[in-house]
Image (tube, rainbow, N blue to C red):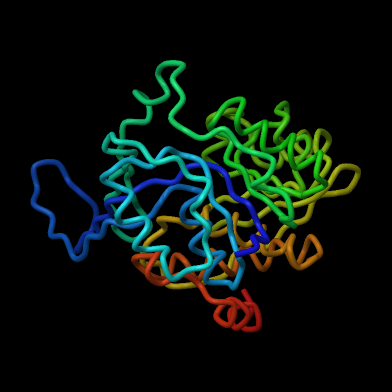
Length: 299
C-alpha cells in the first residue's frame, strides 16, 4: 500500500466505558451502558478516521505490547492503515481507561509514570517511512523524536499537522497547521484568553494556527493577518472521546486536498462534530459523505 499520509504519536489500547444517567459520583453506583477495548490515542484515532475518509495512512509511534497488539492487528486488518513501522514488544503495552457520560469524560492511565524518566517507549522515525507521503501529522509528546518527524518533513517538503504545540517550539514554528486546544492554553498560558494568545501563536508560525474550545467558537489565522472566528456545528453529543484527534485527522485530509484555511477549519470541525455524535468512535468513524452532508447543512 502506498501511503498518502504519515502519522506519528500516541497509539494505545483504550478501554472505554459509557455510563448511563450521568457521570460518576462519590459513593454512588453507576451503570455501564457500553464498554469497549479499541485502538485509541491521538494518532491511533486519527488514523482510524483518515482511513474512513478514504486515505491510505502509515502509522508509527508508541511501542505496542502483547495485550494491545492482537486487538490492533485485528482492527486494522481490513483498513487502509499500514502498521509496518510499529515496534512490537513483550510487555503489556500502553493502555488507558476512559469513563464517559455525554459532555464529560475522565481519562485514566500511567502516563506520569511512563514520562517520569528518560526511557523511550516509542519508535525512532525513519525517513523512508515518510518518503512519498503528501502530508503528515505528529504528536508533540515524544521529545526529540517528535521534532525529528518535523525535520524529515521539512527536508522532504511534506506539510505536517501538529497539536497543542506552544509558540516557542520547533513543531509549532514549522507546522502547516497547529491545532491548539483549550487544555493546552490552560497548561501553558494560564490566565490568558484565547484572544490574547492567538496573536502570539500567529506571529511565531509559518502556517495556519487554530484554537479550539470544545463547543465554543474556533479562532484561526496566519502571521500578518487578523484572526477569524468560526462556530462549531450543532450536534447531539454522545461522547467527546476522540473529538480533538478527529479534528486533527480532518486537517490532514484538508492538506491532502489543498483546502483553503476556511475550508480546512470547517471540514475539520464537521469531522469532529460527526465524531462526538456517536460511540464508540473507532467502530463508527465519520465518512466523507457524512462530513459533506453536515457542512451542507451548516452550523
